[in-house]
Image (cartoon, rainbow, N blue to C red; front, side, top):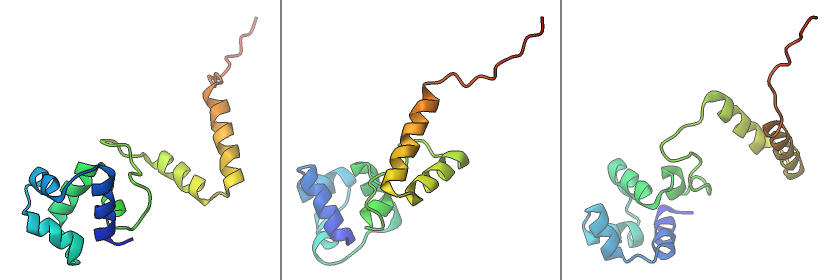
Length: 119
């Protein structure tokens, strides 16, 4: 999906007018109209402002991915979480369900090492 269409969809979802968004982002209405109707694209700074305003990733707004925000706002995944997510995305749907069930099992168990006591 092209940037202009993605931006148009976000405006509709939020029930925003072009004028309101241009005011909120401190950009000229004609500039925003250029993004929507004339195939123009924003500079990096404006792209970041737009993505932050709508709480979506820049990849999403550029149409690179359909995942609106792969990261929790203000946090990043550590290497282990990134590995797990990568593995999850490579699985078939049924395998994903098994992985989720297994994670819930581990989450609800006490996984502390059992100390052996000698009497």
